[in-house]
Length: 157
Length: 115
Image (cartoon, rainbow over all chains, first blue to last red; front, side, top):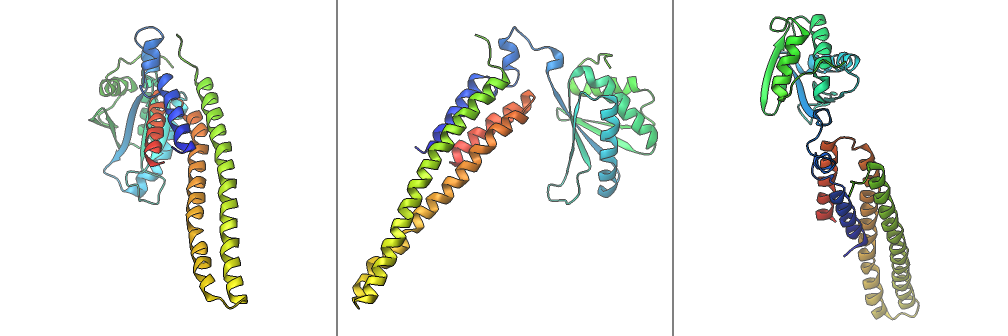
């Protein structure tokens, strides 16, 4: 067996021991269930009914709004077509349940700027379409996003 | 027993990777020595055969020259392995949430299958 293979197996064993291969295992080990805020949710955001070029322009803009409102979340711009040359017209947001309200506030602020835009949220195989007409308050939006993620929104931030 | 902190895990992994890299470096030196010897032997046989007009020396000389392809392939593989090893600590440092950690652990399993 090569030295590289041995080293990789040792690394895999180390990670297994530390519980890296099972998300949430460490929290369970350190005393029952994980705190809701330690559980991170992944939310995908797409733009409905617009061209890809426009979506690539909107994505960094919305990302800025989200980060201004909720600096604790991780937002990355993603390409829907992996072979496309642009930076991507979708966003992937990783957040804890306490950040849902702040995230909704950021998205609502962006929707006020781009009044004709529709945003599609995807999480856990479900979809939610939001635009300026269907969402009047950030609190409504927070509730809808929380419903999509299967969490209870808390008013932190 | 409490779980190891992320910093501890990354430190242990880095140490293991460094040890493997230094062993690979020693193997690399051995392979380079074998490669040079094979090359010199082959070229020596060909040159000697030509000098004394004994053309049958060209056969082992040519074979020795052809045989250097094996150490070269080993060297290329070793370099690729080293790159794989070197990215691991950096990758683990970037994994700051459970999903990223699970992904990193899965990547290591994939790397084991490829090596």
